[in-house]
Picture 1 (cartoon, rainbow, N blue to C red):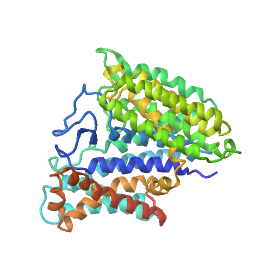
Picture 2 (cartoon, rainbow, N blue to C red):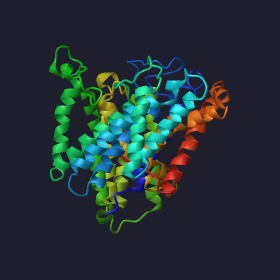
Picture 3 (spheres, rainbow, N blue to C red):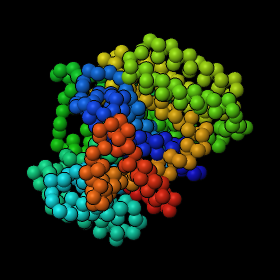
Picture 4 (tube, one colour):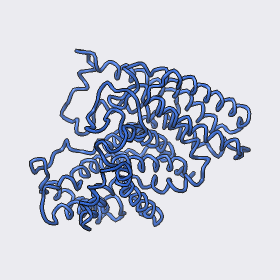
Length: 441
């Protein structure tokens, strides 16, 4: 059975495109607060601990984690290959550390061509390691990477730091390994995954209690550069993703007799609208109105599913899971001071998990959307690395750096600042996918 699902690739593609765009738009006071993380509003973008709400930016990382979880059953249709999984984990951890060290901004204090050459050399190293199949090229890339990390003049007092890593890739590396092991041991006992969430709930909620053992294990320790206990909270997104992946595996069996219809497209639009509405309502704190509107919309979706799409068991599972998680998220919203990404609340995991299921259902109904986003989603590591170690040094190398940096005076310029990075990134990643050039771990 094919291990790829185009709607899932499109989810991942949407996540990478919006992540790059949100990180590339102009910062300061030129754009409204909903264009950034809800807890880091302009103009200073300092973290505000007690500011509840989410924006579209806060949906990006949960989609990555959900897509990673869903990909696990699709890629592990045979028995667990521990050697392969451990190799993948080590490569992703290496990617997280090396990528963070080789970012162009780390060498902005240097003169002449050094910053460009170092960053572009970093891109070449990752290309040889992740983008080629020949072992000799991979070893050459690895050797160059270690030389670069050991001797490059970084801006942090000029030396390599093991704790300096890309946190997003590091989390994905750990969740990939833990999720694969979890799926392996619960493949025949699906309910065990749900049972795991109960003690995990206690672990997470007890970490703020002084002198508790929960708080103790969250303290820094000798290997926290590799894994933190704080990462375990993301299983609240990975585990629902694993269920989605298992259901996608049964798509051909479950969908016999199912047909695409205009009403199904309408339901997909309603699901998309529900996601957008919840982001707007939770950001603006329209909590009571959001609860009633969301419950009404979900009732319409489930009644439609039961009456007009009952034979499609995949859609049934996706929509019921989406509604259940969103309801849980809205009921937990007041818990922990309102929904927040940092520190992530249970409401945040439930709401964004439900949104991920809605988007997976909706994206599957729109071929144009799938065809545009799926090629980017099939090459996430390449797309993730392109801005920081390829496009930005290339812009400066062409003498366009001052002009690009000056695009922060108006809202239009602030948006353009992001588009000039995200569009070439998406195009290059899609072209690489077309010509079968993949960065794989």
